[in-house]
Every structure is written in structure tokens, then in C-alpha cells.
Length: 214
Image 1 (cartoon, rainbow, N blue to C red):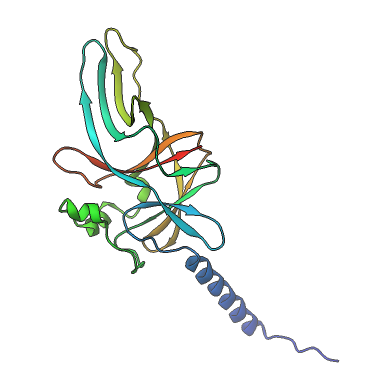
Image 2 (cartoon, helix red, strand yellow):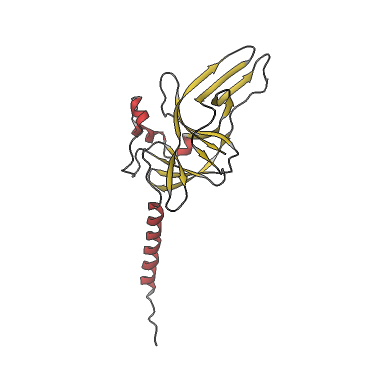
């Protein structure tokens, strides 16, 4: 019995085709979100699926009190997010731009309600890390807050305080579609992604995408 040897050029074409098919399969395994310009949790089960985060318009807080101290930041009503995850290790999120090839996704409704064009987000740069920040929220009474700056007054804590930030790495899946991989495990608590330019109006409110880790 004799074996036929594959010509090197044919073998090269075969490998190229195999790599291309594998890349297409990987890209297609990432689902399209319902809306662009939003951050979704990526549920890595077969098949992949997306979980929409708690979306709210956070009011800008700017309080000054000589006795208790000053506070500047953003506030979300409620002590906990209804969107919960049980494990903060090796978690990923998805963000798609308005220019994404995800043609089935709809433009952000809150942005349009505020008179903004979601396509304008593309002018802020191609790197989501330049406009998206992940914060650990601080609990204060019946609300969750992002402290951009908090200082103690005469009777308060004199130590300046800001909310903790968590970094993430970017994995580009296709044009306008990124996976955000959180760099280290998230401890139990409340969190929110803040996106520059999202939902901003004259009152200084900002759209946040919140979730909790149990």
C-alpha cells in the first residue's frame, strides 16, 4: 500500500484555511448584544451568552460641610444591585461601539432620549479603556456611591478618600466589539462601570452599569 504525499503548497493552503475557519468560529461564538454602547457580562458557557447589567442615571453629588466634610461623586439608589454574580474570579464583560458590525444591536436608547448621537462615541477613540472605568462602590446609607473625592471635616475622618478602581485588559474580537477581562479577582461587594460621555446632561448625571459579587 502506497501513501500519497501532500504537496507543500497544498498543505500550506490547508493550514491557512483551517486557521481562518477557526478564527471565524471563535468570533461567531460571541453573541451580539441587544444594545450598543453598553457593558454586558459575558457568561462563558456553551454557547456564550450575555447578561445585561443594572443601568441607571447616577446623579452627581457635590456636598460641602465644614463639620462633616466635602464629597464629590456619583450616586446609585439602593444598597445592592439586582444583578448578582457568585464568583469574581476570571470574569469578562463585553462592550460594542455604535459602529460595530453587530448589525442586530440597537443604539443606546438613553443616549438618544438625552439628545445624543450614539455614533458620536466613536470619536472618543477606539480604545474602550480610555473611556470606561470600573469602580468598587462605597455603601452610604441606602445608596451606592462613587467617590471621586471625599474629605473629612472638623468632626469627620481627615483622610481623603476615593473609590477603588479595577483595571481590565482588552481583547478585540472584531471591529467595534471588545471583551473586557478584569485583571484580578473582584472581592465581594458592589461595582459599576462608568463610561465617559454616556448620559451626561446639564445636571452632570452619568449612566452607570452596576452589578454585585456575592
